Length: 420
Ligand SMILES: *[C@@H]1O[C@H](CO)[C@@H](O)[C@H](O)[C@H]1NC(C)=O
Ligand SMILES: *[C@@H]1O[C@H](CO)[C@@H](O)[C@H](O)[C@H]1NC(C)=O
Ligand SMILES: *[C@@H]1O[C@H](CO)[C@@H](O)[C@H](O)[C@H]1NC(C)=O
Ligand SMILES: *[C@@H]1O[C@H](CO)[C@@H](O)[C@H](O)[C@H]1NC(C)=O
Ligand SMILES: *[C@@H]1O[C@H](CO)[C@@H](O)[C@H](O)[C@H]1NC(C)=O
Ligand SMILES: *[C@@H]1O[C@H](CO)[C@@H](O)[C@H](O)[C@H]1NC(C)=O
Ligand SMILES: *[C@@H]1O[C@H](CO)[C@@H](O)[C@H](O)[C@H]1NC(C)=O
Ligand SMILES: *[C@@H]1O[C@H](CO)[C@@H](O)[C@H](O)[C@H]1NC(C)=O
Ligand SMILES: *[C@@H]1O[C@H](CO)[C@@H](O)[C@H](O)[C@H]1NC(C)=O
Ligand SMILES: *[C@@H]1O[C@H](CO)[C@@H](O)[C@H](O)[C@H]1NC(C)=O
Ligand SMILES: *[C@@H]1O[C@H](CO)[C@@H](O)[C@H](O)[C@H]1NC(C)=O
Ligand SMILES: CC(=O)N[C@H]1CO[C@H](CO)[C@@H](O)[C@@H]1O
Image (cartoon, rainbow, N blue to C red):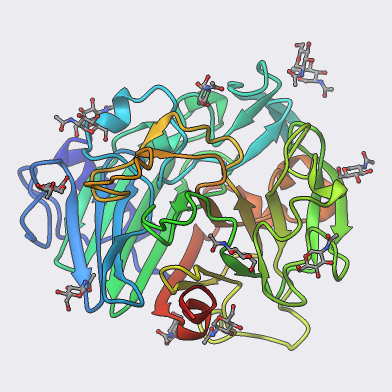
């Protein structure tokens, strides 16, 4: 936790040094004797901070600045908790599986090849934490979603978290200060992530690592998400990866009708799982998706990401709940939970209670979908992609900024496919 005095200094630094840039920094009214701006009542008995708006309510926790619950009413008006998480804030630090449930991976999301990168001729080695220490996943063994962030503001419809990541943390050069604001509007979840490299040039890539089950694990016909419809209208290309999901430099075509084609038309997630090419598509021996799709929206000229249409639409025929993802980011990761195996327990807000058919209260293989708005993964190790300005940030540069808006609706056409 930050001392209030340091926090005040940080906020001062933010507002003075970057006064000319157009983003709005976190509220500066939070200094004081440990008090939080907004006065929305603090955490509940489970350590969760609640916010709400018409048609939507959600809980967040300081650990990883994570979303822990998101409630939306389905096609029958029944409330479903549609994201994975734990029952209480304490358990996030106890669980050894740590599947990055709903948090902010950082300071560099996804994988870093060989746990190393070069900036201005200097090679940096960061701490490895995956594949027998061949690479670094989501910022290292103590990445940003393993830490308790500071709540700097909390209103009835928004919450802001901050984190100071010191110079040398996990091997990364320079200090990074980050602010993440989540807010709810009617049927809408918005977020803005800002990060500033205050002392040295360093890689920064953030995301929201939210696991979705749009049925709240209450679909009596299936525990999986394979029947969800997915549409990625701008994603005719994806990043090629090797057997442990490290980019190998190639940009691959998602040919119409192929396993990775979600752009020419919406398709059920599991539609192509029996195709031979689906095997190995998410790493050696893995069937499904753990794929960084590119988002190509440039051809029509300048655009406003809020108006350009969603980069992704995910909908469930059972609940009819549809989420439209709007984002300013130029890539979009889809992971279909092939790594789940029934060892992760459901929250007490999900699954079946009083269940005579004994549906297990766990997350089964393919029981969820992770969708990550982000930049091109491991671009720090692919200089020929020419994305250094979106991956490397230093003092005096504009801050790293990520914005997204998730719109929720009930799609009656989709629901009719299940309910008739
Ligand atoms: C779901 O509908 C019920 C009944 O109308 C309402 O009380 C509740 O607030 C709704 N849930 C959400 C998340 O809007
Ligand atoms: C906290 O949540 C975990 C997992 O969701 C659960 O196993 C545990 O019993 C809960 N602890 C308390 C004190 O409620
Ligand atoms: C995070 O805060 C929780 C209380 O909500 C505490 O139980 C846990 O130990 C903290 N974890 C870390 C990594 O500081
Ligand atoms: C991996 O990183 C280590 C440590 O920096 C270096 O010695 C080695 O050459 C790198 N290997 C590859 C294949 O780049
Ligand atoms: C990782 O590196 C080790 C040697 O350091 C090697 O034996 C192993 O095959 C590599 N790959 C994976 C997927 O573990
Ligand atoms: C999933 O979709 C397929 C194809 O539309 C359909 O045959 C099947 O009944 C659906 N299953 C569930 C559980 O909705
Ligand atoms: C890179 O990976 C893709 C996808 O696995 C593969 O099709 C391609 O041949 C690989 N290219 C190189 C140069 O390794
Ligand atoms: C993938 O599924 C779609 C929709 O069912 C189908 O049109 C297409 O032929 C399938 N592609 C492969 C490679 O199986
Ligand atoms: C969905 O989100 C976009 C971007 O924030 C917004 O402009 C639009 O009004 C929203 N649409 C609906 C139907 O909520
Ligand atoms: C299931 O997955 C967890 C988390 O990855 C792992 O620790 C466990 O060994 C797996 N269990 C089986 C039976 O594969
Ligand atoms: C509802 O879902 C259907 C089937 O996936 C899709 O074709 C349609 O565009 C969706 N409607 C809206 C308004 O997004
Ligand atoms: C009739 C009955 O068994 N009701 C129970 C259903 O499950 C909820 C939550 O697990 C209990 O609170 C009810 O008592």
